[in-house]
Length: 544
Image 1: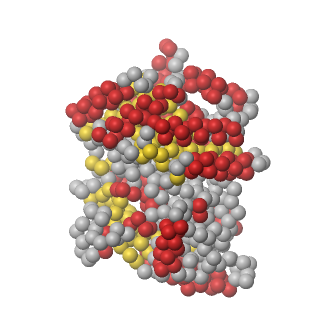
Image 2: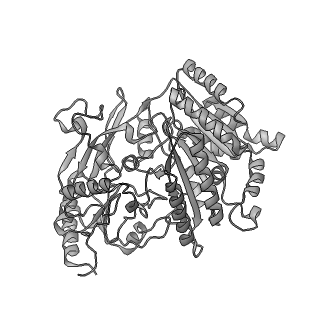
Image 3: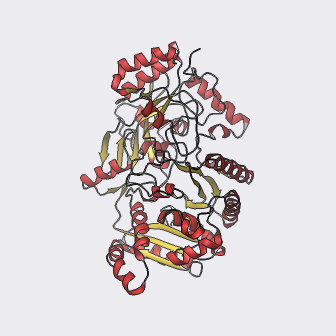
Protein backbone atom coordinates (compact mmCIF):
# COMPACT_ATOMS: atom_id res chain seq x y z
CA UNK A 1 0.00 0.00 0.00
CA UNK A 2 1.40 3.40 -1.05
CA UNK A 3 1.82 6.14 1.54
CA UNK A 4 0.37 9.64 1.21
CA UNK A 5 3.46 11.11 -0.49
CA UNK A 6 3.49 8.39 -3.13
CA UNK A 7 -0.23 8.76 -3.79
CA UNK A 8 0.18 12.53 -4.22
CA UNK A 9 3.18 12.10 -6.53
CA UNK A 10 1.31 9.59 -8.69
CA UNK A 11 -1.67 11.91 -9.00
CA UNK A 12 0.54 14.79 -10.14
CA UNK A 13 2.52 12.59 -12.55
CA UNK A 14 -0.76 11.48 -14.09
CA UNK A 15 -1.86 15.09 -14.48
CA UNK A 16 1.40 15.93 -16.29
CA UNK A 17 1.85 12.79 -18.43
CA UNK A 18 -1.67 11.47 -18.76
CA UNK A 19 -2.85 8.33 -17.01
CA UNK A 20 -1.82 6.13 -19.96
CA UNK A 21 1.82 7.15 -19.42
CA UNK A 22 1.87 6.39 -15.70
CA UNK A 23 1.89 2.61 -15.54
CA UNK A 24 0.91 0.75 -12.38
CA UNK A 25 -0.22 -2.52 -13.98
CA UNK A 26 1.34 -5.39 -11.93
CA UNK A 27 2.28 -7.41 -15.03
CA UNK A 28 4.21 -4.53 -16.60
CA UNK A 29 5.81 -3.66 -13.27
CA UNK A 30 6.95 -7.26 -12.83
CA UNK A 31 8.69 -7.10 -16.21
CA UNK A 32 10.83 -4.10 -15.21
CA UNK A 33 11.62 -5.75 -11.86
CA UNK A 34 13.28 -8.65 -13.70
CA UNK A 35 16.88 -8.98 -14.81
CA UNK A 36 19.32 -11.79 -15.61
CA UNK A 37 20.14 -12.51 -11.96
CA UNK A 38 18.27 -12.55 -8.66
CA UNK A 39 16.79 -9.24 -7.48
CA UNK A 40 14.13 -8.30 -4.96
CA UNK A 41 13.55 -4.62 -5.82
CA UNK A 42 9.93 -3.56 -6.29
CA UNK A 43 8.87 -0.78 -8.68
CA UNK A 44 5.71 1.17 -7.72
CA UNK A 45 5.24 2.87 -11.13
CA UNK A 46 6.66 3.47 -14.59
CA UNK A 47 6.62 7.04 -15.92
CA UNK A 48 6.88 7.56 -19.69
CA UNK A 49 7.60 11.20 -20.54
CA UNK A 50 7.80 12.28 -24.18
CA UNK A 51 9.72 15.55 -23.82
CA UNK A 52 12.36 17.29 -21.77
CA UNK A 53 9.69 19.47 -20.23
CA UNK A 54 7.82 16.42 -18.97
CA UNK A 55 11.07 15.05 -17.50
CA UNK A 56 11.49 18.35 -15.65
CA UNK A 57 7.98 18.09 -14.20
CA UNK A 58 8.55 14.46 -13.16
CA UNK A 59 11.73 15.32 -11.28
CA UNK A 60 10.23 18.37 -9.59
CA UNK A 61 7.31 16.27 -8.36
CA UNK A 62 9.68 13.55 -7.10
CA UNK A 63 11.77 16.15 -5.26
CA UNK A 64 8.75 17.86 -3.72
CA UNK A 65 7.33 14.61 -2.34
CA UNK A 66 10.73 13.01 -1.65
CA UNK A 67 10.00 9.84 -3.61
CA UNK A 68 12.90 8.17 -5.48
CA UNK A 69 12.95 7.97 -9.25
CA UNK A 70 15.24 5.95 -11.53
CA UNK A 71 15.87 6.93 -15.18
CA UNK A 72 16.43 4.37 -17.93
CA UNK A 73 16.67 4.76 -21.67
CA UNK A 74 15.82 1.38 -23.19
CA UNK A 75 16.54 -0.96 -20.24
CA UNK A 76 18.68 -3.33 -22.36
CA UNK A 77 21.45 -3.36 -19.78
CA UNK A 78 21.56 -7.16 -19.72
CA UNK A 79 24.14 -8.72 -17.43
CA UNK A 80 24.46 -5.51 -15.40
CA UNK A 81 20.89 -5.24 -14.12
CA UNK A 82 18.76 -4.46 -17.19
CA UNK A 83 16.38 -1.65 -16.16
CA UNK A 84 16.08 -2.63 -12.49
CA UNK A 85 16.97 0.13 -10.00
CA UNK A 86 19.80 -0.58 -7.54
CA UNK A 87 17.47 0.17 -4.61
CA UNK A 88 13.92 -0.67 -3.69
CA UNK A 89 10.75 1.34 -4.37
CA UNK A 90 11.96 3.63 -7.15
CA UNK A 91 9.60 4.81 -9.87
CA UNK A 92 11.07 4.08 -13.30
CA UNK A 93 11.53 7.14 -15.52
CA UNK A 94 11.32 5.42 -18.91
CA UNK A 95 12.81 7.69 -21.58
CA UNK A 96 12.15 5.43 -24.58
CA UNK A 97 9.40 7.70 -25.98
CA UNK A 98 11.96 10.47 -26.37
CA UNK A 99 13.29 9.02 -29.61
CA UNK A 100 13.93 11.91 -31.98
CA UNK A 101 17.05 12.39 -34.08
CA UNK A 102 17.26 16.16 -33.70
CA UNK A 103 20.11 16.98 -36.06
CA UNK A 104 22.41 15.27 -38.55
CA UNK A 105 25.36 17.08 -40.09
CA UNK A 106 26.79 15.16 -43.03
CA UNK A 107 29.71 17.50 -43.58
CA UNK A 108 30.99 17.57 -40.00
CA UNK A 109 29.90 13.99 -39.20
CA UNK A 110 27.65 14.16 -36.16
CA UNK A 111 24.10 13.52 -35.00
CA UNK A 112 22.20 14.92 -32.03
CA UNK A 113 19.76 12.50 -30.43
CA UNK A 114 17.39 11.95 -27.53
CA UNK A 115 17.80 9.04 -25.07
CA UNK A 116 15.21 6.79 -26.73
CA UNK A 117 17.12 6.65 -30.02
CA UNK A 118 18.53 3.15 -30.50
CA UNK A 119 21.43 1.76 -32.50
CA UNK A 120 19.03 0.27 -35.06
CA UNK A 121 17.10 3.53 -35.39
CA UNK A 122 20.23 5.53 -36.15
CA UNK A 123 21.53 2.91 -38.57
CA UNK A 124 18.19 2.86 -40.42
CA UNK A 125 18.14 6.67 -40.50
CA UNK A 126 21.62 6.87 -42.02
CA UNK A 127 20.71 4.20 -44.57
CA UNK A 128 17.50 5.96 -45.56
CA UNK A 129 19.35 9.26 -45.90
CA UNK A 130 21.94 7.52 -48.13
CA UNK A 131 24.46 8.99 -45.74
CA UNK A 132 28.20 8.54 -46.26
CA UNK A 133 28.63 8.37 -42.47
CA UNK A 134 29.18 5.30 -40.31
CA UNK A 135 28.11 4.95 -36.71
CA UNK A 136 29.76 2.74 -34.10
CA UNK A 137 27.76 -0.19 -32.72
CA UNK A 138 28.15 -2.36 -29.66
CA UNK A 139 27.71 -6.12 -29.64
CA UNK A 140 24.56 -5.73 -27.58
CA UNK A 141 20.99 -5.55 -28.85
CA UNK A 142 20.26 -3.33 -31.88
CA UNK A 143 17.61 -1.79 -29.63
CA UNK A 144 20.15 -0.49 -27.12
CA UNK A 145 19.97 3.25 -26.43
CA UNK A 146 22.86 5.25 -27.87
CA UNK A 147 22.84 7.68 -24.94
CA UNK A 148 22.35 4.92 -22.38
CA UNK A 149 25.40 3.00 -23.60
CA UNK A 150 27.50 6.15 -23.91
CA UNK A 151 26.72 7.28 -20.37
CA UNK A 152 27.79 3.83 -19.12
CA UNK A 153 31.03 4.37 -21.10
CA UNK A 154 30.35 1.42 -23.37
CA UNK A 155 32.46 0.61 -26.41
CA UNK A 156 32.16 -0.79 -29.91
CA UNK A 157 34.40 -1.78 -32.78
CA UNK A 158 35.40 1.05 -35.13
CA UNK A 159 38.04 3.78 -34.61
CA UNK A 160 35.29 5.58 -32.67
CA UNK A 161 34.70 2.60 -30.40
CA UNK A 162 35.15 4.59 -27.18
CA UNK A 163 31.66 6.07 -27.13
CA UNK A 164 31.97 8.62 -24.36
CA UNK A 165 35.14 10.00 -25.98
CA UNK A 166 33.11 10.72 -29.12
CA UNK A 167 30.21 12.57 -27.52
CA UNK A 168 29.59 16.16 -26.45
CA UNK A 169 26.95 18.84 -25.92
CA UNK A 170 24.85 17.21 -23.20
CA UNK A 171 21.47 18.55 -22.15
CA UNK A 172 20.86 17.45 -18.55
CA UNK A 173 17.83 17.81 -16.28
CA UNK A 174 18.84 18.09 -12.63
CA UNK A 175 16.72 16.72 -9.74
CA UNK A 176 15.46 20.26 -9.15
CA UNK A 177 14.06 20.32 -12.68
CA UNK A 178 16.63 22.87 -13.82
CA UNK A 179 18.40 22.25 -17.14
CA UNK A 180 22.16 22.36 -17.66
CA UNK A 181 23.87 22.25 -21.06
CA UNK A 182 27.54 21.33 -21.22
CA UNK A 183 30.50 22.55 -23.25
CA UNK A 184 29.83 25.30 -25.76
CA UNK A 185 26.19 24.25 -25.94
CA UNK A 186 25.48 26.38 -22.88
CA UNK A 187 26.05 29.57 -24.88
CA UNK A 188 23.31 31.07 -27.07
CA UNK A 189 23.75 30.43 -30.81
CA UNK A 190 26.99 28.54 -30.19
CA UNK A 191 28.48 27.35 -33.47
CA UNK A 192 30.86 24.86 -31.81
CA UNK A 193 28.45 23.17 -29.36
CA UNK A 194 28.32 19.85 -31.24
CA UNK A 195 31.92 20.00 -32.43
CA UNK A 196 34.31 20.61 -29.53
CA UNK A 197 33.58 18.69 -26.38
CA UNK A 198 35.70 20.64 -23.88
CA UNK A 199 34.06 24.04 -24.25
CA UNK A 200 35.59 26.57 -21.87
CA UNK A 201 35.90 26.32 -18.09
CA UNK A 202 35.35 23.15 -16.02
CA UNK A 203 34.40 20.09 -18.07
CA UNK A 204 31.09 18.85 -16.64
CA UNK A 205 30.17 16.01 -19.02
CA UNK A 206 31.93 13.42 -16.88
CA UNK A 207 29.83 14.29 -13.83
CA UNK A 208 26.78 12.83 -15.54
CA UNK A 209 28.46 9.65 -16.78
CA UNK A 210 28.00 6.66 -14.44
CA UNK A 211 26.40 8.88 -11.81
CA UNK A 212 23.05 9.89 -10.32
CA UNK A 213 23.45 13.64 -10.69
CA UNK A 214 21.12 14.29 -13.62
CA UNK A 215 19.06 12.89 -16.50
CA UNK A 216 20.60 13.31 -19.95
CA UNK A 217 17.88 14.27 -22.43
CA UNK A 218 20.04 15.21 -25.43
CA UNK A 219 23.53 14.42 -26.68
CA UNK A 220 25.65 14.91 -29.77
CA UNK A 221 27.43 11.80 -31.04
CA UNK A 222 30.26 11.96 -33.54
CA UNK A 223 30.19 9.66 -36.56
CA UNK A 224 32.93 8.71 -39.01
CA UNK A 225 32.99 9.27 -42.77
CA UNK A 226 32.80 5.98 -44.65
CA UNK A 227 36.38 5.12 -45.64
CA UNK A 228 37.42 4.72 -49.25
CA UNK A 229 38.36 1.15 -48.41
CA UNK A 230 37.69 -1.19 -45.51
CA UNK A 231 39.06 -4.58 -44.58
CA UNK A 232 38.62 -6.72 -41.51
CA UNK A 233 41.47 -8.81 -40.19
CA UNK A 234 40.91 -12.03 -38.31
CA UNK A 235 43.34 -14.39 -36.65
CA UNK A 236 43.42 -17.37 -34.36
CA UNK A 237 45.85 -18.92 -31.90
CA UNK A 238 45.70 -22.66 -31.35
CA UNK A 239 47.85 -22.67 -28.21
CA UNK A 240 47.43 -20.70 -24.98
CA UNK A 241 51.14 -19.80 -25.04
CA UNK A 242 50.59 -17.71 -28.18
CA UNK A 243 48.45 -15.16 -26.35
CA UNK A 244 51.36 -13.34 -24.70
CA UNK A 245 53.37 -12.49 -27.85
CA UNK A 246 50.14 -11.59 -29.69
CA UNK A 247 49.15 -9.11 -26.98
CA UNK A 248 52.59 -7.49 -27.11
CA UNK A 249 52.46 -7.23 -30.92
CA UNK A 250 48.92 -5.80 -30.96
CA UNK A 251 49.83 -3.26 -28.29
CA UNK A 252 52.64 -1.92 -30.48
CA UNK A 253 50.33 -1.81 -33.50
CA UNK A 254 47.68 0.11 -31.55
CA UNK A 255 50.11 2.56 -30.02
CA UNK A 256 51.74 3.27 -33.39
CA UNK A 257 48.36 3.96 -35.01
CA UNK A 258 48.72 1.09 -37.50
CA UNK A 259 45.49 -0.31 -36.05
CA UNK A 260 42.96 2.41 -35.25
CA UNK A 261 39.92 0.30 -34.42
CA UNK A 262 39.34 -1.48 -31.17
CA UNK A 263 40.73 -5.02 -31.31
CA UNK A 264 38.67 -7.88 -29.90
CA UNK A 265 39.99 -11.25 -28.78
CA UNK A 266 37.69 -14.00 -27.55
CA UNK A 267 38.68 -17.28 -25.98
CA UNK A 268 37.28 -20.61 -27.18
CA UNK A 269 34.41 -20.63 -24.67
CA UNK A 270 33.37 -17.16 -25.81
CA UNK A 271 33.42 -18.14 -29.48
CA UNK A 272 31.54 -21.40 -28.94
CA UNK A 273 28.75 -19.59 -27.05
CA UNK A 274 28.35 -17.32 -30.09
CA UNK A 275 28.02 -20.30 -32.43
CA UNK A 276 25.70 -22.59 -30.48
CA UNK A 277 24.11 -23.37 -27.13
CA UNK A 278 25.71 -25.62 -24.54
CA UNK A 279 26.75 -29.01 -26.08
CA UNK A 280 24.78 -31.21 -23.71
CA UNK A 281 25.42 -34.26 -25.89
CA UNK A 282 29.20 -33.87 -25.53
CA UNK A 283 29.11 -33.56 -21.73
CA UNK A 284 26.39 -36.17 -21.07
CA UNK A 285 24.28 -33.35 -19.64
CA UNK A 286 26.90 -32.38 -17.06
CA UNK A 287 28.37 -28.94 -16.43
CA UNK A 288 30.79 -27.30 -16.83
CA UNK A 289 32.18 -27.95 -20.29
CA UNK A 290 35.70 -29.09 -19.45
CA UNK A 291 38.88 -28.04 -21.34
CA UNK A 292 39.40 -31.54 -22.78
CA UNK A 293 35.85 -31.50 -24.18
CA UNK A 294 36.44 -28.02 -25.57
CA UNK A 295 39.53 -29.33 -27.41
CA UNK A 296 37.30 -31.70 -29.39
CA UNK A 297 34.80 -28.97 -30.26
CA UNK A 298 37.53 -26.57 -31.36
CA UNK A 299 38.91 -29.15 -33.77
CA UNK A 300 35.44 -29.96 -35.10
CA UNK A 301 34.35 -26.34 -35.61
CA UNK A 302 37.81 -24.99 -36.52
CA UNK A 303 38.37 -22.07 -34.19
CA UNK A 304 41.26 -21.30 -31.88
CA UNK A 305 42.00 -21.13 -28.19
CA UNK A 306 42.04 -17.38 -28.85
CA UNK A 307 40.39 -15.65 -31.81
CA UNK A 308 40.88 -12.01 -32.72
CA UNK A 309 39.51 -9.36 -35.05
CA UNK A 310 39.85 -5.71 -35.96
CA UNK A 311 39.30 -3.29 -38.82
CA UNK A 312 41.45 -1.32 -41.26
CA UNK A 313 40.10 1.95 -42.65
CA UNK A 314 41.46 4.40 -45.23
CA UNK A 315 42.48 4.49 -48.86
CA UNK A 316 43.45 1.24 -50.54
CA UNK A 317 47.09 2.24 -50.22
CA UNK A 318 46.75 3.02 -46.52
CA UNK A 319 44.98 -0.27 -45.84
CA UNK A 320 47.60 -2.16 -47.84
CA UNK A 321 50.36 -0.56 -45.78
CA UNK A 322 48.61 -1.46 -42.50
CA UNK A 323 48.03 -4.98 -43.78
CA UNK A 324 51.75 -5.45 -44.42
CA UNK A 325 52.60 -4.19 -40.92
CA UNK A 326 50.10 -6.53 -39.28
CA UNK A 327 51.40 -9.52 -41.28
CA UNK A 328 54.93 -8.69 -40.20
CA UNK A 329 54.02 -8.15 -36.54
CA UNK A 330 51.96 -11.35 -36.21
CA UNK A 331 54.18 -13.61 -38.31
CA UNK A 332 54.97 -16.77 -36.38
CA UNK A 333 52.70 -15.74 -33.51
CA UNK A 334 49.31 -16.84 -34.89
CA UNK A 335 48.17 -19.95 -36.70
CA UNK A 336 45.96 -18.18 -39.15
CA UNK A 337 45.67 -14.55 -40.27
CA UNK A 338 43.11 -13.52 -42.85
CA UNK A 339 42.01 -10.22 -44.34
CA UNK A 340 38.45 -9.86 -45.53
CA UNK A 341 36.69 -7.26 -47.66
CA UNK A 342 33.15 -7.06 -49.05
CA UNK A 343 33.96 -9.15 -52.12
CA UNK A 344 35.62 -11.94 -50.18
CA UNK A 345 32.77 -12.09 -47.67
CA UNK A 346 30.23 -12.38 -50.47
CA UNK A 347 32.21 -15.26 -51.98
CA UNK A 348 32.37 -17.01 -48.60
CA UNK A 349 28.60 -16.80 -48.27
CA UNK A 350 28.04 -17.93 -51.86
CA UNK A 351 30.30 -20.97 -51.71
CA UNK A 352 29.66 -22.18 -48.15
CA UNK A 353 27.42 -25.05 -49.31
CA UNK A 354 29.64 -26.23 -52.21
CA UNK A 355 32.66 -26.24 -49.89
CA UNK A 356 30.78 -28.50 -47.47
CA UNK A 357 29.84 -30.88 -50.27
CA UNK A 358 33.40 -31.26 -51.56
CA UNK A 359 35.44 -31.01 -48.36
CA UNK A 360 33.05 -31.86 -45.54
CA UNK A 361 33.93 -28.56 -43.85
CA UNK A 362 30.73 -26.84 -42.69
CA UNK A 363 31.65 -23.27 -43.48
CA UNK A 364 28.09 -22.08 -42.85
CA UNK A 365 28.59 -21.84 -39.07
CA UNK A 366 31.77 -19.85 -39.56
CA UNK A 367 30.01 -17.50 -41.99
CA UNK A 368 27.06 -17.13 -39.58
CA UNK A 369 29.50 -15.89 -36.94
CA UNK A 370 31.70 -13.94 -39.34
CA UNK A 371 29.04 -11.89 -41.12
CA UNK A 372 27.68 -10.01 -38.06
CA UNK A 373 31.21 -9.50 -36.70
CA UNK A 374 32.27 -8.02 -40.04
CA UNK A 375 29.20 -5.79 -39.94
CA UNK A 376 30.00 -4.52 -36.44
CA UNK A 377 33.39 -3.34 -37.72
CA UNK A 378 31.39 -1.20 -40.17
CA UNK A 379 28.95 0.06 -37.52
CA UNK A 380 26.08 -2.27 -38.44
CA UNK A 381 24.05 -3.37 -35.37
CA UNK A 382 23.27 -7.05 -34.89
CA UNK A 383 21.56 -9.22 -32.31
CA UNK A 384 23.81 -12.22 -33.05
CA UNK A 385 26.02 -11.80 -29.93
CA UNK A 386 22.86 -11.67 -27.79
CA UNK A 387 22.31 -15.35 -28.55
CA UNK A 388 25.15 -16.25 -26.19
CA UNK A 389 22.90 -15.26 -23.25
CA UNK A 390 21.00 -18.49 -23.98
CA UNK A 391 24.14 -20.63 -23.61
CA UNK A 392 22.89 -22.82 -20.74
CA UNK A 393 19.18 -22.82 -21.71
CA UNK A 394 17.84 -26.17 -22.90
CA UNK A 395 15.12 -24.57 -25.02
CA UNK A 396 15.85 -23.12 -28.50
CA UNK A 397 16.77 -19.46 -28.86
CA UNK A 398 13.60 -17.53 -29.81
CA UNK A 399 13.35 -15.40 -32.94
CA UNK A 400 13.03 -12.30 -30.72
CA UNK A 401 15.50 -12.82 -27.86
CA UNK A 402 14.74 -11.29 -24.48
CA UNK A 403 17.07 -12.62 -21.77
CA UNK A 404 14.98 -11.11 -18.94
CA UNK A 405 11.72 -12.62 -20.13
CA UNK A 406 13.30 -16.00 -20.88
CA UNK A 407 15.09 -16.26 -17.52
CA UNK A 408 18.57 -16.40 -18.99
CA UNK A 409 21.23 -16.16 -16.33
CA UNK A 410 23.98 -13.64 -17.07
CA UNK A 411 26.44 -11.68 -14.96
CA UNK A 412 29.14 -9.51 -16.51
CA UNK A 413 32.39 -8.61 -14.78
CA UNK A 414 34.50 -6.17 -16.79
CA UNK A 415 37.84 -5.11 -15.29
CA UNK A 416 40.35 -2.90 -17.11
CA UNK A 417 43.88 -4.28 -17.30
CA UNK A 418 47.10 -2.77 -18.67
CA UNK A 419 47.83 -3.83 -22.23
CA UNK A 420 50.71 -6.12 -21.34
CA UNK A 421 51.16 -9.87 -21.66
CA UNK A 422 51.80 -10.30 -17.94
CA UNK A 423 48.61 -8.54 -16.89
CA UNK A 424 46.48 -10.41 -19.43
CA UNK A 425 47.93 -13.74 -18.34
CA UNK A 426 47.19 -13.01 -14.68
CA UNK A 427 43.56 -12.21 -15.25
CA UNK A 428 43.11 -15.07 -17.70
CA UNK A 429 44.45 -17.56 -15.20
CA UNK A 430 42.47 -16.41 -12.19
CA UNK A 431 39.26 -16.19 -14.26
CA UNK A 432 39.64 -19.64 -15.78
CA UNK A 433 40.45 -21.30 -12.47
CA UNK A 434 37.69 -19.54 -10.53
CA UNK A 435 34.86 -20.15 -13.00
CA UNK A 436 35.69 -23.78 -13.78
CA UNK A 437 36.00 -24.57 -10.07
CA UNK A 438 32.57 -23.00 -9.51
CA UNK A 439 31.01 -25.01 -12.34
CA UNK A 440 30.81 -22.29 -15.00
CA UNK A 441 32.55 -21.84 -18.34
CA UNK A 442 35.19 -19.05 -18.42
CA UNK A 443 33.91 -16.93 -21.31
CA UNK A 444 36.49 -14.18 -21.75
CA UNK A 445 36.81 -11.37 -24.27
CA UNK A 446 39.69 -8.91 -24.39
CA UNK A 447 39.06 -5.56 -26.06
CA UNK A 448 41.90 -3.14 -26.74
CA UNK A 449 39.92 0.06 -26.37
CA UNK A 450 43.20 1.99 -26.58
CA UNK A 451 46.80 0.95 -27.04
CA UNK A 452 47.32 1.12 -23.29
CA UNK A 453 44.27 -0.50 -21.74
CA UNK A 454 42.25 -3.67 -22.30
CA UNK A 455 38.68 -4.26 -21.16
CA UNK A 456 38.50 -7.87 -20.00
CA UNK A 457 34.80 -8.73 -20.19
CA UNK A 458 33.92 -11.98 -18.40
CA UNK A 459 30.52 -13.65 -18.68
CA UNK A 460 29.04 -15.94 -16.05
CA UNK A 461 26.25 -17.67 -17.96
CA UNK A 462 23.63 -19.93 -16.38
CA UNK A 463 19.97 -20.96 -16.44
CA UNK A 464 17.77 -19.19 -13.90
CA UNK A 465 15.16 -21.95 -14.17
CA UNK A 466 17.49 -24.36 -12.36
CA UNK A 467 17.02 -24.07 -8.57
CA UNK A 468 20.04 -22.65 -6.79
CA UNK A 469 21.80 -21.36 -9.92
CA UNK A 470 21.17 -17.70 -9.06
CA UNK A 471 22.94 -18.14 -5.74
CA UNK A 472 25.82 -20.16 -7.19
CA UNK A 473 26.41 -17.66 -9.97
CA UNK A 474 26.41 -14.68 -7.60
CA UNK A 475 28.83 -16.47 -5.25
CA UNK A 476 31.12 -17.09 -8.22
CA UNK A 477 30.86 -13.43 -9.27
CA UNK A 478 31.75 -12.20 -5.79
CA UNK A 479 34.67 -14.61 -5.51
CA UNK A 480 36.02 -13.56 -8.91
CA UNK A 481 35.60 -9.86 -8.12
CA UNK A 482 37.50 -10.23 -4.86
CA UNK A 483 40.39 -12.07 -6.50
CA UNK A 484 40.67 -9.74 -9.48
CA UNK A 485 40.50 -6.52 -7.47
CA UNK A 486 43.17 -7.90 -5.11
CA UNK A 487 45.44 -7.95 -8.19
CA UNK A 488 44.70 -4.26 -8.78
CA UNK A 489 42.20 -4.61 -11.63
CA UNK A 490 38.86 -2.80 -11.28
CA UNK A 491 35.73 -2.90 -13.41
CA UNK A 492 35.05 -0.17 -15.96
CA UNK A 493 31.29 -0.42 -15.30
CA UNK A 494 29.24 -2.03 -12.57
CA UNK A 495 26.09 -4.04 -12.20
CA UNK A 496 23.36 -2.89 -9.85
CA UNK A 497 24.46 -5.54 -7.33
CA UNK A 498 27.87 -3.91 -6.84
CA UNK A 499 27.43 -0.17 -7.39
CA UNK A 500 28.06 0.69 -3.75
CA UNK A 501 31.43 -1.05 -3.77
CA UNK A 502 33.08 1.56 -6.00
CA UNK A 503 34.28 4.15 -3.49
CA UNK A 504 38.03 3.66 -3.61
CA UNK A 505 39.63 6.30 -1.41
CA UNK A 506 37.71 7.99 1.40
CA UNK A 507 38.30 11.41 -0.14
CA UNK A 508 36.71 10.29 -3.42
CA UNK A 509 33.62 9.05 -1.59
CA UNK A 510 33.45 12.26 0.45
CA UNK A 511 33.55 14.37 -2.70
CA UNK A 512 30.78 12.32 -4.32
CA UNK A 513 28.58 12.75 -1.26
CA UNK A 514 29.18 16.52 -1.24
CA UNK A 515 28.31 16.80 -4.92
CA UNK A 516 25.20 14.65 -4.47
CA UNK A 517 24.07 16.70 -1.49
CA UNK A 518 24.48 19.93 -3.44
CA UNK A 519 22.80 18.73 -6.64
CA UNK A 520 20.14 16.46 -5.12
CA UNK A 521 19.59 17.39 -1.45
CA UNK A 522 16.41 15.29 -1.24
CA UNK A 523 18.30 12.25 -2.59
CA UNK A 524 15.53 11.31 -5.00
CA UNK A 525 17.46 10.59 -8.23
CA UNK A 526 18.63 6.99 -8.73
CA UNK A 527 19.64 6.29 -5.13
CA UNK A 528 22.41 3.70 -4.99
CA UNK A 529 23.57 4.25 -8.56
CA UNK A 530 27.39 4.54 -8.50
CA UNK A 531 26.97 6.10 -5.09
CA UNK A 532 29.45 6.37 -2.25
CA UNK A 533 26.98 5.12 0.35
CA UNK A 534 23.41 3.93 0.55
CA UNK A 535 21.11 6.93 0.51
CA UNK A 536 19.19 7.10 3.80
CA UNK A 537 16.66 9.59 2.43
CA UNK A 538 15.13 7.27 -0.22
CA UNK A 539 11.48 6.90 0.76
CA UNK A 540 9.86 3.47 0.87
CA UNK A 541 6.65 2.98 -1.07
CA UNK A 542 4.88 1.33 1.86
CA UNK A 543 2.84 3.08 4.50
CA UNK A 544 4.71 5.01 7.19
